Length: 515
Ligand code: NAD
Figure 1 (cartoon, rainbow, N blue to C red):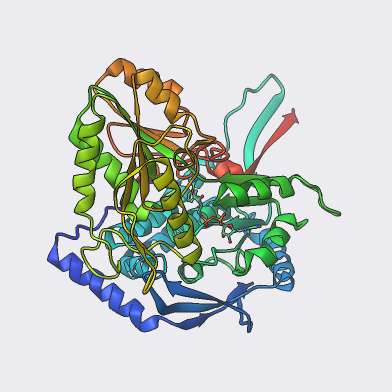
Figure 2 (cartoon, protein in one colour):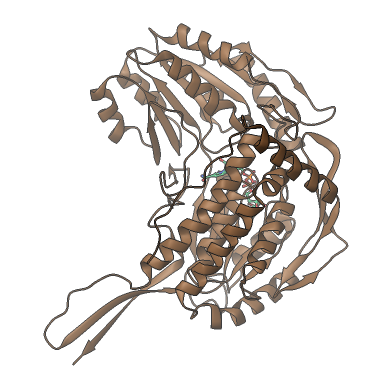
């Protein structure tokens, strides 16, 4: 019998013992900084001279690790090993495959704070955010294991006299997982183990910003008993191996999460049939967002300000679901803005490995420069109310920044910034609030803060996003509770952490027998 899925609880950092345990995790990881990490193919370790250098975004001088870069030859070798591993893994009982995920979840759970500490050092996550990222990774392991068990018997079909029909799922073969850096454990874990538990070998190409934590996942899955060759770890420079992985004739699927630009490139390239390719490639592409919280005239204004501030500045706005647009009814605009400014002033910015830091640095120099540029654009397009200061002397720090009176079609309201910047705009009535919310090319998350049931019901169907929230912020989806995926240019709406996710990596087969 499959036990019901239970979401991994978050750590209560108001408890002194828990804080000490977390500090212990940080100490342990600090001792391990600066090591060399290999490529892994068929369980074998390969070190190359050319390496990714992963650094702490809050302390540029601190090297997290050196990670060997895979070449095209490594990728060919990884595909060979995946094809060999598929012969056994694809036929292994789903219950045995799921057990490996459950064991991996237990291993991570035991070393939870250590994983979160890697996230604090390598991805710049404050304690609470890091803890949430690790918990989500554990949830993916537990949830997808259970989902596989649910699919073991396929689905029922109708039978006729003298005929029996069956409908069941089979894995597809090797595929490629390409995750982003912003959920450096959770998304890496979820996008890797879902195709694996479905019976497919995976080549994992982690983000160049956070390859060390991805390697830690590879180690856990090995410890949990994953056979050699089922997961091959091929870190590298995306400009060198990205297209090669996507174009490869042996790639059955690409499980991508990242920016719109990379996602659309992958979709286009994957559609081209290569010499010797005997299948169509499936692409799951979860991409960017320009997420809006709208605040109605009749609404809880404290809740509205709290939702905007948490969703805009949690993990420095570097979530695909981050609120970067607050669109308010004109009658409550000034009051909510004032409350939001007050709450934002309370946020501390600093090195997230230290306690009680609300916001760390942004991930790298490129992102820092991009956010700075948007702050300048914002000064031309609206009025800077708070923040705007940046400092990259030690790490890539940006103060939480609020602009007001921004026009609905301004660049600040249309383009994904992926930093701690939120634009406020006003509207005359609820229809206009919705119209502005829908006026970008993205459709990932959104929230409505309103006490008006009629308005909520209108938004239920007309607010065009994959994940819509009422009377709460627009971030923090939980596996099994809020399956996640966007509409429009936000992606293929795969609904990660949901009941239909594993089918993306399975082929349904029908067998009819005449008696
Ligand atoms: P990115 O597109 O720069 O990189 C994502 C991944 O693609 C990385 O592993 C990168 O190395 C790889 N890559 C880059 N070029 C490639 C190429 N030509 N071929 C193959 N792979 C290539 O995105 P990022 O900066 O890592 O992540 C931030 C973006 O991810 C934001 O746009 C954010 O909204 C989005 N995101 C979306 C979701 C979601 O569920 N919709 C979740 C998290 C992040």
